[in-house]
Image 1 (cartoon, rainbow, N blue to C red):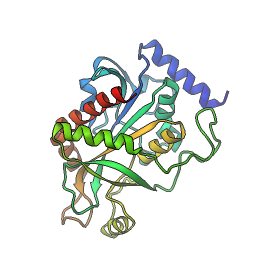
Image 2: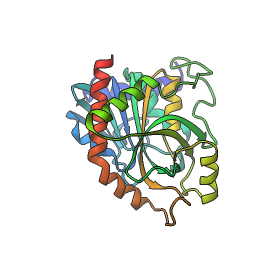
Image 3: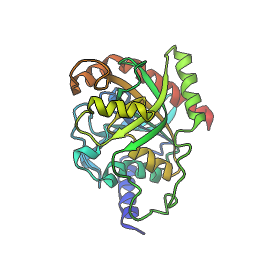
Image 4: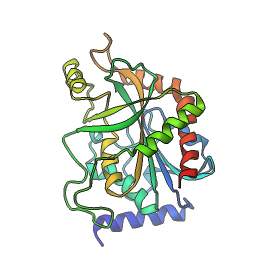
Length: 277
C-alpha cells in the first residue's frame, strides 16, 4: 500500500469514527458559498484542523470544515471551504479531499467557485454551469507517481463535466425559475487578479469565466471516476470589462447576495441526483 493509500485509509477511518456515514454526493463550496452546509440535516461537522493529513483553509469566506449529513434526502458531504494552490499548498494537498471522497465511496461531485466574468454578456450574480475548462495554473495534480488504486495513468478528459449532469442542472434551474449561463472556466494560479491584457487573451482562447481553483479538483475527480457538475458564481466582471478596481470584498458581497438562489439550485440538483442513480 502506498503512502497516499495509508493516509487516506487513516483519514477515512477517523471520519467513520465521527459517524460521518457513507456519502454518495460531495459538494465543494467556494468563496462565500458555504451557507449551503448550514442546510444539511443531522449534521456531523469536523473542522479541518482535527482531520488527519488535512490542510487548513486560510482565505476569508472559507469556514474550514467537513459537514456530513442529509440534503434533500440524500447522503452528502460538504467542504465548507477549499484549499488553493496560491496558499502555498502543493497540488497533492489541494486535491487530497477529492482522493478522500473516492475512499469514502462518493459517486458524484458538485464543485462550486466564485469567478470573474470574462464573457461580456455575463453580469455579477449570474450562475454558470461549467461546460469545460482550461488549465493555466502551470501544474497538474496527476503529475508524479500514478495512484493506480484510484485511476489510470492517462485519464481521458473529453467529458470532465458530463452533459447528463449539466442537463440535470439546467432542469433544476428551470424548476426554480433560476436562469443559468453555461461556459468555459479558465483556472489561473493567482493570487493576483488578472490584467486587462490577460483577460483579452482568455476571451480570445474561449474562456467565459476565470478563477483560481476547481480545475485541480476536477482533474483528480475525473481520474478517480467521480462524475462532476461544476457551478461558477460570477461575483465580479474581470479586469478591463468594467472600469473599476477588483477586490475580494466585492466577491464576498456578491456571493452573499446570491446565496439563497445558489443554495436552492444545489439542493435541487442533489435531489435530482437521488433519482438519477
